[in-house]
Image (cartoon, rainbow, N blue to C red; front, side, top):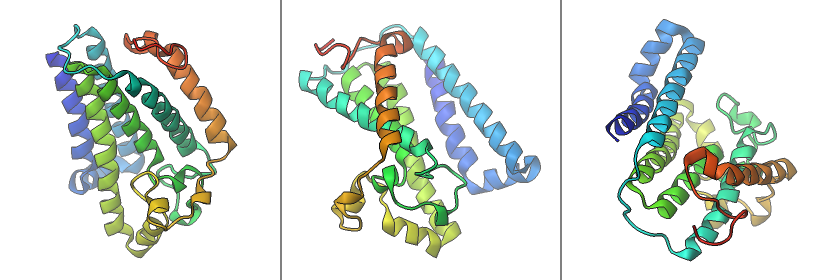
Length: 231
């Protein structure tokens, strides 16, 4: 458990420290922008893989709570939405990846749901696993990754607002940090929630694949839609 906690904290801390402008600018100046991104990605991947491997070796921890039966069915729908958001964030039509100019990011597809579709996919995944598991080790792993994703995207908004000024504020006026926030506030019509066939089909296939592999991936039970009874 100690190694798992240390690696997880190091993973979270590395993102916070390396994303801070003074540290990032200094390292990018020495390594170049490309070198910094490669180093950042390799360090993040190594710490994440290490934390997951350490998690797999942790003996079953104390059970903090037991999720009600209905939560498993709600979680199934949330994981499907998370899969659609994730696939949609990668498609050229949605242009949600870093480095894409704001002028080429129309608030359509999954970007009409939230301007951080990939991070909210991770956030939904984390929330589902925290609620359904109730085990201390899973709560730490999923909760840490989920908080990093959602707090990191909120911090990115603040940083981009300072860097890009009016351009970023114009982009924010079309979109929302919170899922469906633009529609609930009236900034986008509800008909804007047309994510397109690629995110829907690709997200559905990803959801089916991950739920099927769930037992072999993370020492976890079979889940809907492959098993509808509560584990």
